[in-house]
Length: 286
Ligand code: PLP
Image 1 (spheres, helix red, strand yellow):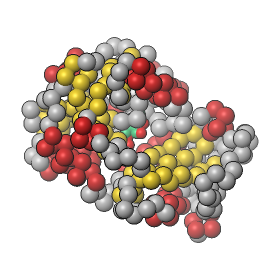
Image 2 (cartoon, rainbow, N blue to C red):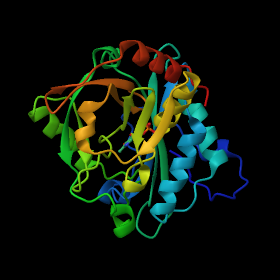
Image 3 (cartoon, rainbow, N blue to C red):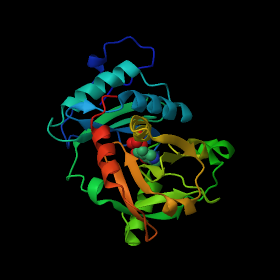
Image 4 (cartoon, protein in one colour):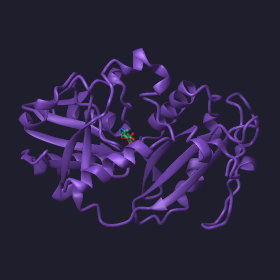
């Protein structure tokens, strides 16, 4: 648990961090993060004790906090806490850190914590791929501008809808979901960003349609540039998904999972590009 400091506090971060072992009760049940999902989070991938894309995650944590009118996070404090949590994971396994800031107990101060978890399994889907279905997100692509109180584009703790969508995908015999706006544009997956390949162009949906800016997507674009591929953030119609030369869902711990089918229609897999993309993502130092 972390005694959350104001952004400009100069206190020694080490004195604000308390370590708890798994299973020890730590959270006040009145916490609005638990009671209402009123808070923000980041999931950071850890490889060999190293927290990946840390600057991008801290920057998105600050943006999410601002969208929820939460105090700005103290970057020095979170960097320190994240580095301690990262080295607590087994160095020979990949893992993840869930970094959380909630509104705290009503009338109180924000609550902060990090949960460090070694990754389970062998990430077979990075090779074997995933089947996805498209599901209606239930709002139009101008949601962020038209209804900012829906917090589209903030990484809030309210993920019940995202998890329900993944259960719906399983009921339909698929592994994951691509949300589509009710006016027909490709948005994002419940916990990942969509990346498509068209010829020598790597394309991702524009974030101004009310989706989360992905940190892995940023790294994939850097990788694409290093391969001489062009990159673009675009408005993509759902019908374009099956016209792609390859497609992936990307996120911090999963990294790049190639999509093998969309709504039962096969999508080509570029195995060599996928391997190189995952190697580049695993090698990230920021
Ligand atoms: N979109 C959503 C809704 C997410 O929850 C996530 C990550 O959890 C992503 C995209 C991918 O973000 P990142 O690459 O930073 O993990």
